[in-house]
Image (cartoon, rainbow, N blue to C red; front, side, top):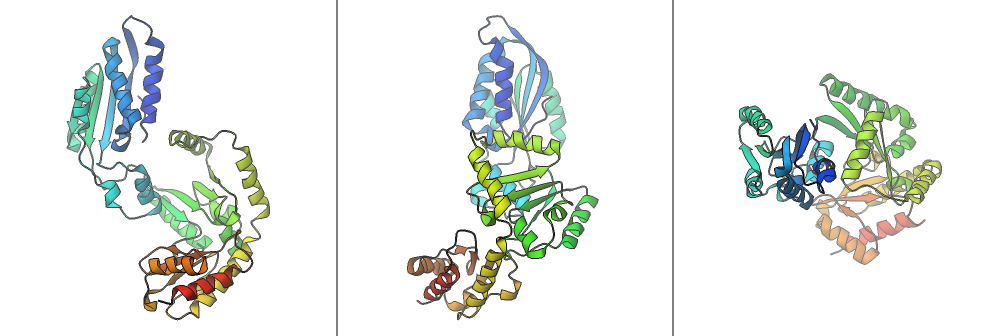
Length: 367
C-alpha cells in the first residue's frame, strides 16, 4: 500500500516506476503490488495527474494481474495553498479560491476506460474500497468529503513575532502554556519563526529556549536578517526528511544554491544584533505617527520592527493613505485592513527613513 500524501506527483512517479520497464515488452505484465494512492481533488485536475490517468488507461490492459486504486478526496477545493493558510496560520476561508463546480472524477475515469466509483456517504467508503481492490485493475474512487474539514493533520502553529498585532513577542511562559495545552490534546506544535531573532533581541531570551517546546521551527533568513532569499526548517530527522520530499514535489528544488546559502550564513553571523537598530527606529516612527492628527497608534506596545496604526478618524481609507504616501513621499506602507496600515523597519532603509516616512504619512493625510 502506498500511504498517500496530498500531491499527485507521487502517483506520477509510481506509474512511471511500475510501467517504465515494460513499455517496450510485448508480453502481458504482472503488477505485484496492491496500491492505494490518496490524492486531493486539486491535484487530480492538474495536467500531470490527468496525464497519468491516461497512461494507466493505455497500459492497464497489459496487466495480467494487479490492482491500482486512486482515492480522491473531493472537497471541491483546488487551492492547497489557501488550505495551508487556514490550517497553519489560522487565516479565514477565501471563497473565490475555494468554491468551484463539483468535478465528477469517477465519470472522468470512466471516459478513459477505467472504473470509477463515487462515494457520497462515509459509511460507503469501506465497501467501495473493498470492491475497488477486488476489481483487478485501475479504479478511481471519488470520495466526497466535507469541504470545511482541512486535509492536513491538526496541530498548533504559533508565530514569533506576531505580525498582525504589531510584531509583539510571545513570552516563554505563554509559549510553554500553549504548547502544553496542545500536547494534552494530542496536537503537534509548530513555530512560524519568521521573526524569531527579533524576539531574541527584544527579550534577551535565546532562540533555543523559544524553540524547545515545539516539534518544528521555521526561521526566515530574509525579513529582518536581510538575506536576499532563504529560510530554514528544523525538526526531527524524520520530519525534515519528509519536508524535503514535499519541497521537491511542490517545485522547491534549486540547483547551485550555494551562493544563496552563503548569504543566509552571513545574515546569521552579522545581522542579528543589529536588529536592535530596527526596533529603535520602529519606536521612533510610532511616536512620530502618534503626533499626527487622525492617526491612532499605541507607541508603547511597539517591541520590535513592526508598527500597526489606524487612520479611520483621519477621514481617509488605508488604501488611499498608502497610495498618497507613495505618490507624494515615495514611501510604501502596507494595507492590512480598511483603515489599518502597517510599517516595517529593516536593514535596507536609509539613515533618514523615519523622517521620510513621517513626512510621507503627513502628506498622505492631506486631501
